[in-house]
Image 1 (tube, one colour):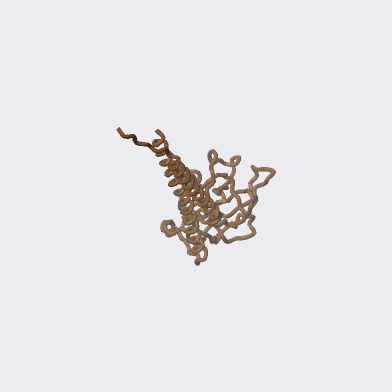
Image 2 (cartoon, one colour):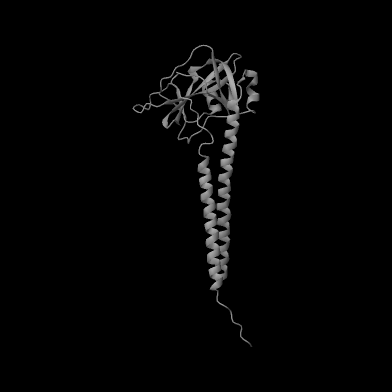
Length: 245
């Protein structure tokens, strides 16, 4: 019975070592993925902007991230606010507005961040809305950053839509506009009441390294304790005497 218990304890310890070491390796992979993605974004941000027309929209989806330049008119009647966002340590919303290009194609533009009124959460920020033809430069990315969604997206008092996350299919149903399956994170523009201090994707990599170190340390601790108690059990194992018949 004692031998069976020891074997079960050894198997459990080995499983725990494998699990914790695997979790440490997973955290390192997550850090490497973030660093690689940040490097791709940095290369795209340094590149010359690519002029985009409706004919280019489908092909761009396979080249993200990509710095682009678009010409068109904002469709402010269909803009949406993304709630529960942060920038520069402040709480607020992101403003996403569709841009109709000269050939009729529509691309969503994340125009930037605006602080929420702390005294009236239902009050939307006041921002400038340029009329007529505009030129927008920014980084074309697959989607906006997502947050934990609680409940359904809903309009703010029958006015502009306030959503927690951007969903292309839902936007098309609400607006009746066919849009590209990517969004432009605007980098140009000023004095419109919006912040565009876009966070770096690699931010927080040190957190993954810290978690990895914790998991590896736990794996080492389990291995050390297993070896210690295993050797101790062997030293105190009762000897079996054999008597002559």
